[in-house]
Image (cartoon, rainbow, N blue to C red; front, top):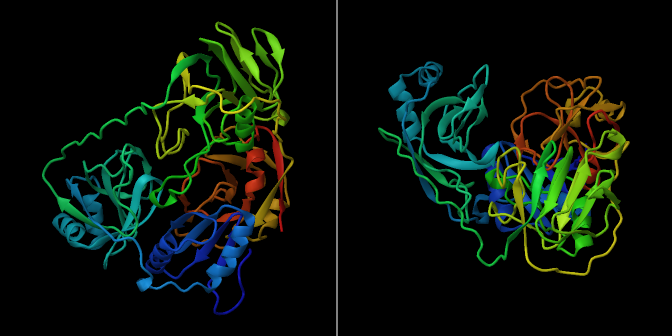
Length: 513
């Protein structure tokens, strides 16, 4: 656990190689810190995520993270530090939730008393997490409400819930364990807006009782008319999963949006470089093999998992520009050997285009549902017009690791053997892994601290340990916040390799200093 032992220093933990987590005494202090760092960002600061008692600061390099660690230990923000002017947001609620009587019993009041309590309290947007637009709102002098013993498998969009000291509106249908007291038609997330989250940290929120729910349908995003798009390929076989990915949408953790982007960013960038695109242009990311039929002559490149690519049955090299003429078919086979990787990337000269852009990115986020959904057989693949730079032959960057390097913590002290509980054994990749995380199986990791961890910010690379002791290594589509302790964090430099871990592969972790 990398922190500071100086008595008057603020406890700060290193999170992987490019982030730092600040431990704070309470939510109010965390909000003050978030406000200060939002208006006075540190050098290299890419994102800041407030949570119940922590603030996570994400940086753009290891050197910036090292410098931030030193600054954060002595930082003393105050209420007068400044911040964005808060707004008052009104959320209309029909108080018809199935848990109203349960909440009334917990609070020792009536159903009408619960409604009065909810509508008369002063609520403040505290932090985002769980899902885009799901903002934890904290009330003044609000009694704590316990979560359900058994979470619901599906909570409808618009449900208004209570849990602990928080209230929130579910922006989309999802599992959830909060006590549901009502429903709201107020759209708390609209991807077509420049500021898609209705409630942001620091906003005042007024819940208003209404008699009926009136649906408000957000307008559909318009296609960018300046982009000259044309269907150049047809996806004839999507394999197990084919999605559109680019450089992602970093910097929006405060409203519950993770960075997403290509799971193996290096492979995607090399594929783009080979066909002359910008490094962050959108590509196709595939698991299980795919086939594409050209509707006109196109230049493509395939990188990632070690496999034999063919055009009309003839073998072609990875990381090389390939001309696929009109009517020809490109086939990227799936990979059977877990030592040869998992994900393949297909770049098309001009870059893949789609009208499903959200927050400046076409990346498909499988956890939140942002961006275009998984592609299906028959999907038309559109590309932009023109070549950006000369094509060249590259080197396929894929590496299927035997070892991943980790930085201890931030919560390694919660485990009986510290980080050794993770690094001292071999782990097998579970078939239930996906873009959210790599699920690992092996000898269970035992906790020495059984307290409930208040939700705190997570990064790609966080190795979280749930109650069953089987670690989960978060990838690009991880949740912004999580409630299980993170024993260690894979360094950013090893994330691309981690994304190529296939079911059945084995991996070890070693501590990085």
